[in-house]
Image (cartoon, rainbow, N blue to C red; front, side, top):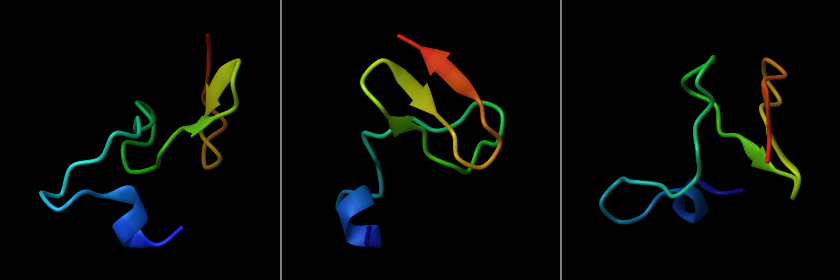
Length: 44
C-alpha cells in the first residue's frame, strides 16, 4: 500500500498499531488482528 492510503491529511490513521512493536500495523483477518513483524495476535 502507498503511504497516502494509510494516513489521512492530518497524519492520523484508522488502523491499529501493534502494542508490542509500536511501529507496525496489525493486519485484519476477520477473526483476528495479526502483526507480521513480531507475530503478535489479538483474537476477536
